[in-house]
Length: 430
Image (cartoon, rainbow, N blue to C red; front, side, top):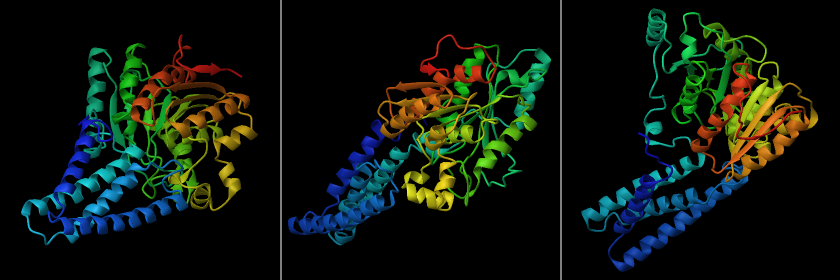
């Protein structure tokens, strides 16, 4: 289940089989094979050329859309045309290979797009988007009863899924994933602070638990602090009407109201979370990192602490152009965009009392530039900041480590523990 489908041996084998079956599926007659390849190459080149033009004009793939999904798309079109044109040629093995080539090159093309987005990094994530250690409400009650009976906290926290009521926002979402630390199960439940963790785009509420090992990070922290760690709420910020809300109120629904009103209310009313000042923090990866900065700047009384892991400088709907983002999410209003743009807000405002963590991979060009842009702006705007650049790219290896790096610092700013002795980042206080 942990086998990678974006790197390593599995995608290499699928790619190799795709090329081999494409070659075996060609007509054995030299002249017919040349015509088959020529026609397939022309159709594939035209198709990919049109696709590339659409990507470039619409900005649908982002400014740095890679070439390999287009190359494998070319191979897939070639395989389809070759299979159709050469179907009547003799040879059962050849026909079977041509069909296999169509399937394998299509899988590889989709895999290349997936590797770009990081939505399904492993076989397990492809098969099931729920964490392996999920429990249900009766199991949670059983843990509480065991703690009441023995007086001993569980060795690990518990993860469950639930629907967070969208009472104020009316936002139509998928279930959230919740982590409860060991101390939550104490006979007298302490009012613990809450860390809200947001996925990227496209993404799932379970990503931080399943791929980012958020509960493992929290359990390790709790083991060193007598079972104490923040409650972690991992909501769905995109809802059922879009794959990318950018966490703003838009025609797709009131995502921002959901995240700043409904989610905190749920944590306090249903999880016995602390309602004191500074008891909420928000963090996120990729587009979720952009969201975390925006939410903190727009609602500093709700989220005075934020963490951006590989976030971008400004909202960017599905990695499209600025104009598409403006039209899709903000009704064409630059003023509304500016109200939710971290780069603009930090350059034009003061935010004393806030604290922000920026972490990014050294090979992740656009988020790296964003971190180096936003962190100085945040410091100049009165925010206590930390920035860390680690070797790595735009993936869960980086984000898992980033959360581990930031976790003690976040717990400190949530008032849960004292200032950590060592912080693996460069930090500035205003």
